[in-house]
Length: 141
Image (cartoon, rainbow, N blue to C red; front, side):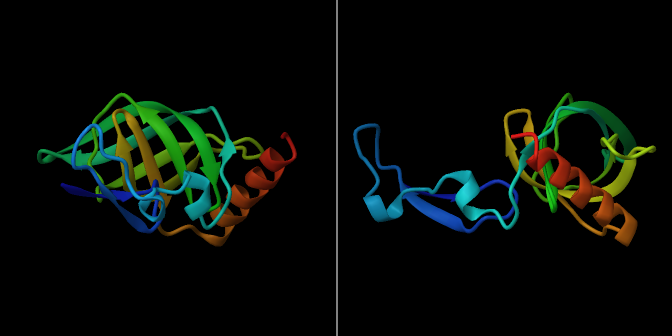
C-alpha cells in the first residue's frame, strides 16, 4: 500500500511504502523533517487565538493556542474540527501589535487537533507586523 504524505503547510508530497509493520521505506523514499520543506523558518509562539469558519450552513467559532509562527503561516492546536482546504478567519494577538491581527487563512495540515494554516491575503501592514514578530522571535533562541 502506498500513502502520499504532505508536510505541514505546503511542502512537497512524498511517497512512502506502507506494505506492513515489518516493511521499511527505502532511504530515498523517506519523508524529510518538516523544516527541510519550509519556505520560511518557524518560531515558537504561544498565544490564544480565535478561528471563525462557515460550517453546516452557519458561522462557528473555536479557540486555540498557537504553537509556531512563520512569515507565511501559523501552527495551532484548536478546540474545533477543520478539514484541510477549509478557509477560515483568524484573530491572532501578536507581540509588538496593539490590536489582534485579523486575516484569512487556509488549512494546509491537520494531525489530530493540531493544524497548520497558510496566510492568504495579507495587507502590507499585516505582512510587516508578521515579519517584525518573526524577527523578534528569532532573536529569542
